[in-house]
Length: 58
Image 1 (cartoon, rainbow, N blue to C red):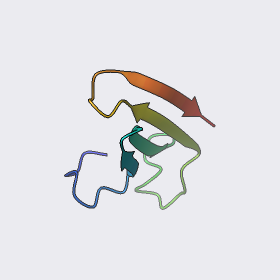
Image 2: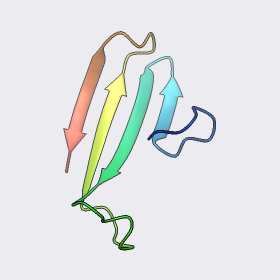
Image 3: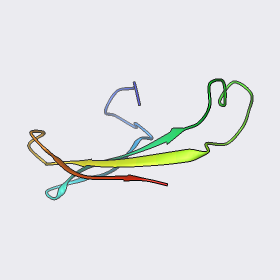
Image 4: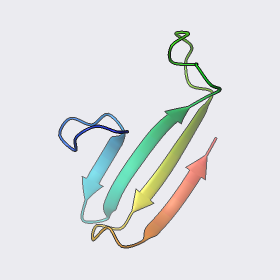
């Protein structure tokens, strides 16, 4: 998530409908332990960057 906009794996869609971020998460250390994410958060921001259009968690 804290990467450049270029080739950022968290940006799963960017078009006139908005920018969709898909952010993996889990308990502390999950990435360092080699575990997969236990939670996925999806946030859609308006194309102008001024408002949150949608949020989803699994």
